Image (cartoon, rainbow over the protein chains, first blue to last red):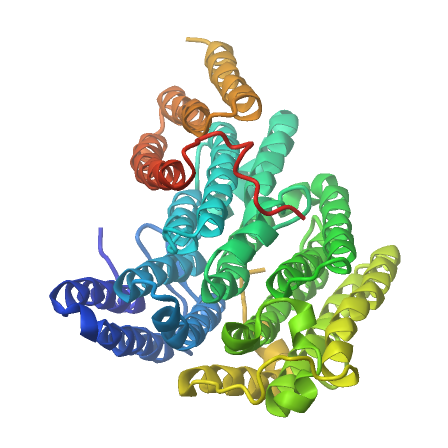
Length: 482
Length: 101
């Protein structure tokens, strides 16, 4: 079999980089471990360059149709690399202050990133499964990296148990699909499912199993229990990485399977997905109202956001067409925008948390003590709430339009109600920061340079996409998948 | 070999695994139950490949990948369980509940 090395170049560059990181960690003496950070940063930057070289090329297919590089794959791979760069910049000072081993952290982060890159190109059940595990397994270790912290242990155990259980269920579903269709290629599965209507009930059952498996990764309702605990217990940059990159990887896998392989059964799974999406956003937003820890608040808010991203799947048409295309583009656009607002909010939590604490009460009067930090936090929270002219508003608009185009008006109503509920807890934090007297927290927070860069990039993206929403919409529509 | 037998066997294994995950409180036993569920999928893949008389061996290759990845994953999982045992002298998943809601 001929391998198109140009198509897999970014993955090869990253594999090389993570091997180098591992070796550099081995040879460096303990007091110079900080040098691993620039090495990893260069590795991801090199991957990004290799990706940019692929952008705009015609679609490349290799490894027997399993690995496809089209504009969809390239767009999402660039997003994953940017998210990894932001996480690297966010974690450098955090790791040094918390005394977490740096070499392991960066190596595991790059391994997880490699899985994300391959899942965006996978068009077959086998590489989707392998990539998903490559994303998750290093993340278990990252969550439990603070070895003597019992909360970190607990975070890792909960994450691990939920993850492997959902993987087992998903694999059983995949094996049934293979049994019915005799293939693992996504496009081929769609063709053969349409040709054999006899085994429809088993096909529906296996779709259900696969959705359960992905439901865990994207923290959809009844599989979201691990999310707040894992985010709170693990190092905060890891929580940011999980909530942005790992969740996006889950969505990429789910969207590909549902839109390419299973859209023929859409009339069966559509109501189910609609119910899951509504329950997910309602649960996330209602429980977030009661939270007092900023990371848990962001965790529940990210569950609510997952509900919005899932919503366009509930209007998928059996026969394909423009409704599917719009729905797909809306979900992808939301993922692109969500990454920056979530990353931004987490980086402010990291910047303030070390000196000020992680409880929402600790944010009282931040507007007087550290006005800059308070203002950018407000930008990210209001963007997550969907207030114009910030990026989150555009993202919600895309979803809203896709749902209306699919003539599912009650879904649009449910989403609007949820947006209002969500506004309460985002506004609660903002009120704490600006309308309450400054407590005894630190005056003027010193933010390390790299963290400043993360916050600046996220802010610029949130404002820019908010003013020019077509940027994200255009990128999302480039996808030729559906 | 009728396909029904295979499906009964794999579904039985899968159900035993699910029962074990829900009923067992010892983290190591939960891991073993999950292993049963993974093996149910393995049996399906291998047998379906055989029955389909397919020219490709993707089903068997899939089973090999599952075996390998499950081994790696359980290695990490056991490491986490040992870590918890060291810090808290228990492997009961009911007692690992510092964080709720």
